[in-house]
Length: 256
Image 1 (tube, helix red, strand yellow):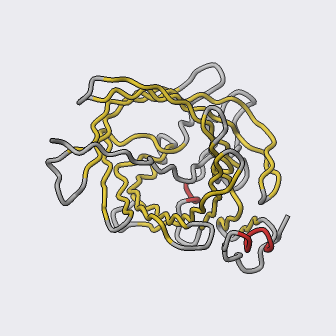
Image 2 (cartoon, rainbow, N blue to C red):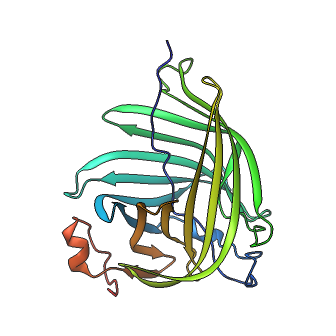
């Protein structure tokens, strides 16, 4: 019997900068420099407005350029590590997007691997506009590497990304001018022949290019930026706020 895997698909900090797009377009707004060693991002995850864990994200360029690894560590509110992941990404400058090939994550000493065929656009469909959404199709397979023949989840996915517009958004790290996207994903489970549809919201800072907030359709679950260091620039919540959830402040950060 196949083991059914119920896993949280980890969303990474995404990429979008307002560097030439019009009011209803993000064409030309791409900043591949976000995916460099030394850039770090810290988020608090909320459920019904209550914080429940923290995620710290960093990047590691690979020798096989333009591929990079995204490293993420989930911690509880006391600072104890709960879960870790490593995504393999390609920085596709020509098409202004980041492609996700795989996501390997571990929890309680159990490791799972998620693979995408073809690689799915994980970041910034630059040609999405308020009038013309971007659609992509791919398959997702999740399994334990120790038992690769025992596929836990195998789905066909159809994603529609729409640019909503530019918005002001306030987080503990400050107030940002952002680009707002929605993703609607229709998932067809190949084994059970069932289909589900989910919608999520993403907001990106239009200067530094980092994800500022991620939320589900009802906005009852959110991932909110509290601290980041991007190519020498730092944004951060006040140190006292970070210390409440055992986040180590970035040196010389300017609290807002």
